[in-house]
Figure 1 (cartoon, one colour):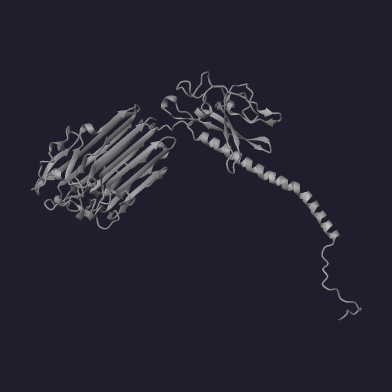
Figure 2: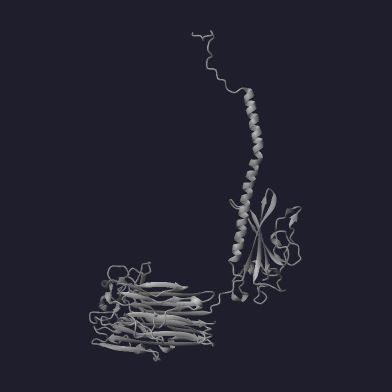
Length: 584
């Protein structure tokens, strides 16, 4: 055995470790640290709990105030079963069922549902409620839920005067929201104080928020003008059961003056769509002002609904003329007779305008139909799209096969030479439309031409005199087997519908067919169907459609011998309206 130099054996694996004294000293130091940090840990835990409760209480109070703001200020009792903020928060002068005892010693006492009711001036109230004046108290209890504490919500609502600062207003004797007469608000604004009470460490604590809610009077429209036109609108349902539409010559102009002046022009040469959401259009534009917008022209070439071929909707070149728009100085203006807003079909490609609801192979064989079911007449010629000073089709403007034009004008009421006026104008026309071409009538069973249609609404002068003018002319022809015969020329002088004189079931149209084989019903606008109104500084006019038509089913049906009823074609030509209002 080896020895150390001093002759002693070396120690065998001795581990010094901690002595008892060292362990006692360490524990002592730890206890001192824990004793020093424990109060801070407890305060931190309590602060987190308090912060959570305060945050939740503030959220409940804010939600209560937002709910009050989102209610109407006042809806008269005789208007029907509608509820307003007063119905919930200041419904009558009924006294609380239980007198409020706000404190229990130095602590807040829990509010009771029986405290709800009218608190008259001078009556004792809690420190978190309005200090003076009459108010109405509501009490609502929110039970605890997962992660949410229990809360009691006390809302105090006062009528307030319009002074600065506002003071409380006492409702008149007999006030109740359950009466049209006695339910009139005591003032046009209320003050709301929401207090949310919650329990923390066996102590009831409040969080309070306040706001003012004012009656918002409806905006008074001082000037309004609108012009709308739709030259052609046709619709049906595809063999897949999807509605499809096609329109040409779409125009919508509007201008108004309330607290601000604004104008909007919505124009489309053509527009087509399927109910599945697929849409396509020719030249189109939506513009608005204020303050003003310069004139522009939008062009688009031939187009379709986006499907192969022209089974549904196709059209040639289109154009929209966007006139100068202005809303400055409270005078809405959209174009003029010399430079109107216009939506035009200008090109003959794709038959100019064509529409169908199925491939030609799906049409009923007995009708001998060709595609498309509607198109521009191959012999159609274009016409100028302008507007005259009297709101009628003019001799200027771009050549178009379908056109909708118009303008909105407002003049200053205090002008030296004009006591003020508001005017709107819409004009429309189409070249000849061909419907239901067949082997024996290649140009179509029917030809429809809208030579003109116009409406003008005007309010002018110090007396706000309202006037309306309208005019239209359309010609309907049908193939009689050898030539086209005029079924009727429609004008405002037509007291009766000339199309009613034709018996669809017995009028031949060639090919051993009758008009009734293709047409289920048709009608022309008569003088009595034009809607006009002139009263109280307002002029309104509406032409619901100079020509309307519904076809027979054009597709076969496996179960119905007369064809698939969803395959009928609906057509409206020349739908226009206008309005003008001036109460400045």
